[in-house]
Image: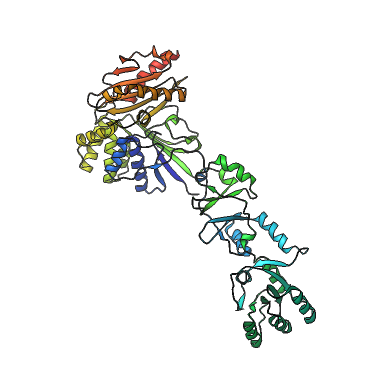
Length: 550
C-alpha cells in the first residue's frame, strides 16, 4: 500500500504555518520523494488568503480532521467484474488476482453487488442440485465464452433466457419424446458425434446444440441449422465437463450479494466496523459519490496501519494539531516554538531552533540540500518570515531571519518593507468580520499542570476598532472558555504601528486577581512593547497561571 505523507501546521493556520507546509512539500518533491502533500486543518485568515492569491500558489489541501476513516485505510487498487460476465469468468478472476471478493459493476463502473465465495457457492449449489430442475439462466454468448467454444451458428447472443439443459444419452425415439415434453424454444442439447441426434435437434428447432469433444456437423445439417435458426457451437471438452461448465455460464449478477451496500471514503471506521462484521465476507465495497467503485475494504485493512503519515511544521503540541492526529505516525517536526509535552514511541526527525519563523528554517533546508528555491515558493517563504516577525521588528527576530529575508528578497526581487506592509495591512482588516472569526483565526490552546487556557492573536493598524467592539469580543471569548472548561480565553491585539498590544481576557473570576498587567479598562490590559505571543506573552502568562495554581 502506497502511503501519502501530509504536512500540517497548527489547526488554525497562520501565514508562517501555511507557507511552511507548502514549501516543505515542494522541497520533498524536488528531493525525489513521492506523495508529500501540504494540508491545513482550518481556513485561512485574510492575510494568508491574500498571499496565496497574490503569488498564485495552490492552497494546502483542506482536511478539517484526521478521524480514522475509510480513505486512510483503503488500498485503492481494485479488481471488478461486469454484471454480464459469467460466473466462470468471475471465479477465475478471483483466483488469478488472489482476492476474496469482487465488486460487480455495470457498464459505467457503478456498483451493483458483491461476489464472494460463500455466497457464490450457495447459489451454484442450488443450480446444480440434482433434486431440482435442470434449468440454467444464461445466454448463448456466455456459454460460448465459458466453454471457449467454436461457433458455427449464433444469433441474439446477449439475450438471457432460462434454458433447459439436456444430454442426448437415450435412444433417438426416447430422446425425441423428451424434447417434446420440454418444448424447443429454450432447450439446450449436449451431444457428441450422434448425427441422428443432430438432425433431430435441428428439425425440432431447439435453442442451442452443443457438440462435444470437437465434433462437427455435416455440411447439410449445418445449412439446415442456419435455415431453422438453431444455434450451434463446438465444445472442446467432454460431455460431462461441458455440462458442468454450462452451470457456470450464468451471469455473475445472479450469484452475487445485492444486500451488501457500499461505503464512502469519508465514512468513519466507527461507522463501518459493525457493517463489515455483518457482511458475509468481512469486506465492503467502497464507492465515490457517483457510486463508482474505488476499492474494497476488509476487516484486515481497518486493523492495519493507515496509508498516511504526518509531518508537523510550526508547532509541536498535540493540543494545537489537527484533530485525530494521535492515530497516525509523525515522521518529522520542524518548528521554532517551545517544546511542549510532545513524545512519540519511535525516533523521528525533530528540527527546533530559536528563530523568528519556521519559514526561516525551511529556507535553510533548501540551502543545505543545495536545491534552488522556485520563485513563487521563495515569495511565500519571505511572506512567512515578515508576517511572523512583524517585518523583522518583533523581539523574536534573529540575525538568521534578517539574513534569510535578504536572501529571499534577492531571489524574488521583492522589497522587504513594501511587501511587509502590504501583507500586514491585508491581515489587519477586521471590518465586516465576526468576533468569532477573529478569535479563532489564530487561536492556540495551552496546558498547564492543572488547567487549559487559550491565547488568540491578531495584528491591527489600530486597536480602536477592537475596543469599540469589546463586548462582542468578550462574549466570544467567554463562549470559548466555557466550551473548553478553560481557566481563561484571551485575545492579544497587536498594534503593528506602535509595536505594543492590548490583551482581552475572559477568565474564571478567581484568576482575575492574579493578573498583574497594567489595566486599561475592565478585562482589558495594556502590554507595552509586547508583540510576540510565543516569546513575550506566554512566559508572563505561564507565571501567572503557576502562581494561581500554587
